[in-house]
Figure: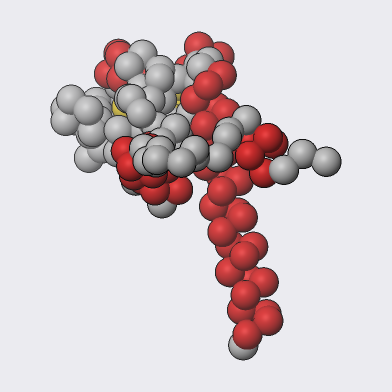
Length: 147
């Protein structure tokens, strides 16, 4: 059976050898979520554009009031004007929202996220959701044991 060092592909320090303290510091930062692949739970760059399919399937609605305005360009809708509605029920001029969703996948008003065509980003979102669920599960287990 392999010992710890063999299992990890490491070797013990020889007489007179000093450990690499920078590696220890890096490991410390990664272990405590200050630095690493997960970027402290944040996506390392701007979210990608919304998927073409999601954008194509956004419904067109007819504005039946005069007091609504587009939160992107801030212009009021005309009565009976056509507009695009996101799943979060926020309404925008077609040109405004299509330009916006071509850059990012979220509602400019409430940040509701539409699906993307970026597989890495979708995997990141799933992992983030799983991490939140694990945290809730551990808290529930802790509370059931110690309350």
